[in-house]
Image 1 (spheres, rainbow, N blue to C red):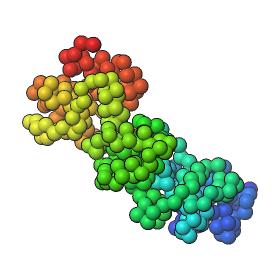
Image 2 (image 1 turned 135 degrees about the vertical axis):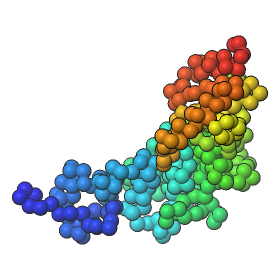
Image 3 (image 1 turned 30 degrees about the vertical axis):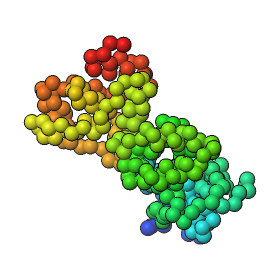
Image 4 (image 1 turned 45 degrees about the vertical axis):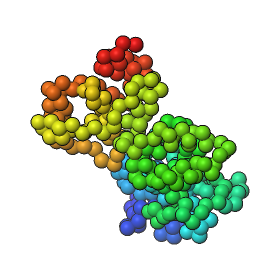
Length: 311
């Protein structure tokens, strides 16, 4: 394209199939050049997104964009031949996910051929009841309860507990989840599902809080209360996890990564002022970050010391 003005991408659109770009006058060579320049980003075979749109998106949004790209590229979801499920449905439901890849999971009534899907797609075979189907962002996916169950059957305990905590917080029916669990007796992964249901807590507000609670339980440390509200001279302060009688608070500094927004400097300042007021009342604070969750012995010693317990 030397000496020529590069053709601009069509306005009003951000996602295209190859044939749509070709229909707008872009040759294969031009498309390749746009990808090299960053004006286009190839999301999967035959599907592209405007580069400026992709760069501006946060990781959680990009993960959902990959699902949208799959739907846009296949043109088959509207016909009911496939439904987004497992971790893909979890992303559409805006559930917290931890250490999960971006592969697209779909469920179909019939076993698909090996060549009908790309490498980025994980097909599942199974029948879905009418009340297990919903539409989110215009895409067909499994219901909140069915999504959680599918994830618990296939993920590790820690990953499943994070999803279950958040699902309960969003209003998932505990009764329906237990009913589904009982109907799956003998299935692979059902023991994880049952254990997660027994230990889940809707009060948990982030993956970090969930994993912290799980670690404390495994270490045999007294279970703290979640989201404890305490009055201070600076206003009401809500503590992530607390041992109220011993006036020990544990705060997890890692929430921002899992939310679509970040707290403002003013919000952080006010929170720290309330925390100082609590310390003046005699509260002892333990602050942990993600890296602390992977050094359990050190975390155990810090908590036991704060609680006045000798190991």
